[in-house]
Length: 344
Ligand code: PEP
Ligand code: MN
Image (tube, rainbow, N blue to C red; front, side, top):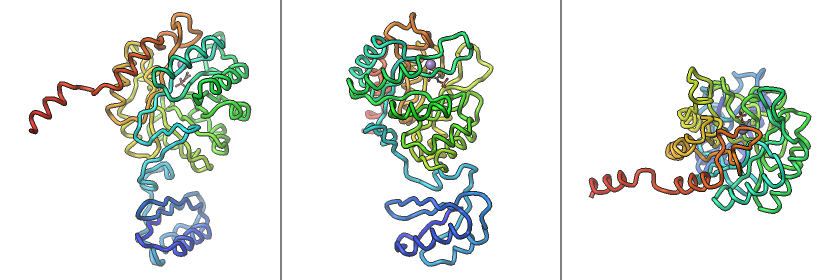
């Protein structure tokens, strides 16, 4: 349930409602907007009728049920958009943040040269896998702690905050010591033990959508993080499984727009895993920018043909630079001109 406070509700009235929500056996989550405060009562096992009765309390405008199964991530509970701060880089503030780097950290030379190139082209965060979720046990599994150390060095040298994937609860602590943001990979989106553990860390989380997960399931996975105490979550659409075999996955751009409609959390797109084809990354990136995505995560490698993972979907440095240039251009200049002429 949400308790919408009146515009001029006093601090005492708001505190009274928070106390009553807790007394009724729920957790109280407070969103203070510029005009009014919303108190969300979430949890199971509480006494709903006691919440409904709060409609009569001083300072309360209305008490309404939360329409969606996800609560704290919904726009009903928090109408204003969330901004996630990743070591000083703000995702969700209206800018378009590009996260770029290799699929896997392979060597010092590979990581450092990539960091230098993506930073020069305008990327704000560096990605790089240390622990890799590979379909086959015979494929490169990542350099583990050695890669984490390289990520930390590169972060210090280039001032680029780093994002890396956490596959299991046992790695959370060491990754938190080295990285600025932790990625939950698509295959782990519904690893609830991992989500519960990440709800307790003091680092932002990049939550990828599972390849077979609905938007509702994805937002419920995010709910685990928020309900457990970590509000710093960025959603990432990375393609879903469909009947199409020409692309590795089907990048579901509608879900980016939908997730932004249903939730206040920032949403980024991953056109690399979402298509599996380097040629499709620029058009899908521009489409994501056009529909209002909060950013991108893109795979970049100094020599994609030598990459130990995901070479076919990795851009080389000059292709990445071209992508960044194209993102800075107006989408259809001739159309802008025509519309302007038509409206003179
Ligand atoms: C990755 O980012 O390299 C990765 C493995 O992503 P996903 O979990 O989306 O497959
Ligand atoms: Mn990859």
